[in-house]
Image (cartoon, rainbow, N blue to C red; front, side, top):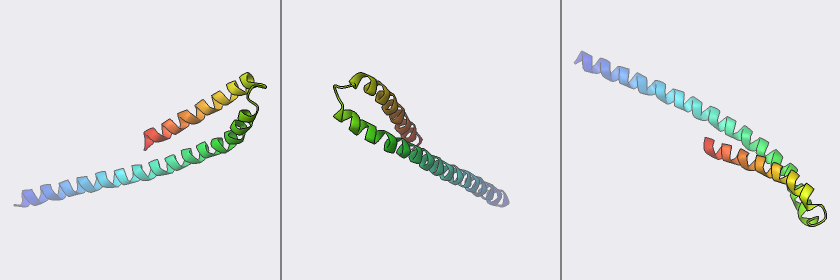
Length: 87
């Protein structure tokens, strides 16, 4: 009977340790995801006016503007994909 009690105690302690570790990892992941989201939001705020302006200027300097914005859009897209992968 004592062996069963000891085994149960060890099992419960092991589960508690795993739970605590997972809770910490989740907390850190949330913080990391929030930081990534904030960085992406800053990028969005920077690129949004440029996208709007580019839409108005289509045809004038579409190639040079399009290439630069294409890179910015691609970087933002990759950031969203990284964040989605973390969640």
